[in-house]
Image 1 (tube, rainbow, N blue to C red):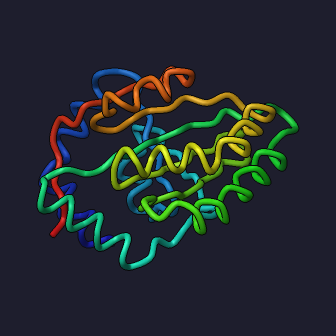
Image 2: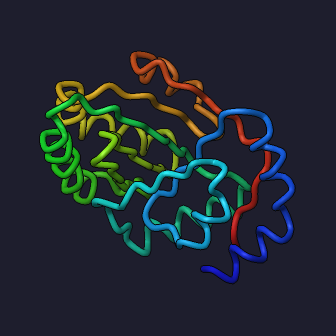
Image 3: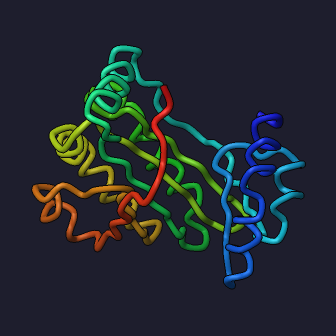
Length: 190
């Protein structure tokens, strides 16, 4: 909320200024962004990608994810994928993305996040997904494979694994030439 954003900026605003001074920086808000946050971060030329669709994990799945994270001090597997949509392919890309939601909702109980955001003007989509563990990631890859392949008819993609890409998953996702961004610092909310 706005009060939390103000507290955060009061504490770390100089770090944002230092990052902005390093050169080209881009900031994306996934979902909504208050006007005050956009104004405060104007030097980053922020982009807002509205939420399009996603899953609502069951309370059991989310509870298991949060419990495992707290107990083992780990976050599961988190993935950020940016799709650069071909001109005149926005509707097709959105349809394929929407077709994935019922698959994930009904067949992927280990998926704790699967959200899609679109910037219709810039022809960009972002998918944020998270899995309890490697078997949950593999289950999703198996269940959604055929529909995933259709995304390549409408876009190119860049995939980033946030944190750790388990060794047993590296070969399975090598085709996507993913980036792996190790966790540098963070917190797990209680």
